[in-house]
Length: 150
Image (tube, rainbow, N blue to C red; front, side):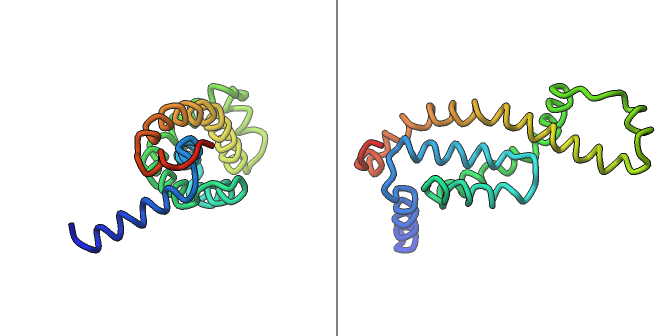
């Protein structure tokens, strides 16, 4: 193995470990992935950083999970909008058009809010499920198993 690859592998393992248990790392990765699926572009990276710093989580790990979720974020925008519209049925479209001449910005904000609410409904169980699945997998990694229990 080349020296560069060995060094990169060692640094990556060190970043991922950073004194966290497998359970805490699983939670970090699950949160990063869930936040990465947020149906608002550009914001997930900042939200992940704030969550990681606030709760003392591994910043590189949460950002890696966030970036891994980006393709899924794009794929989930329309389903989350549809789920949000189903969760919050609004009045007829005719009534919305009659309310204001500038109804489009209001409709965009309303649709965004509905998509965010749908994301929240989906994200909470997703974080729990991912944490439960990832914890035993990460406990099998020798470098992480050496870290103490959370």
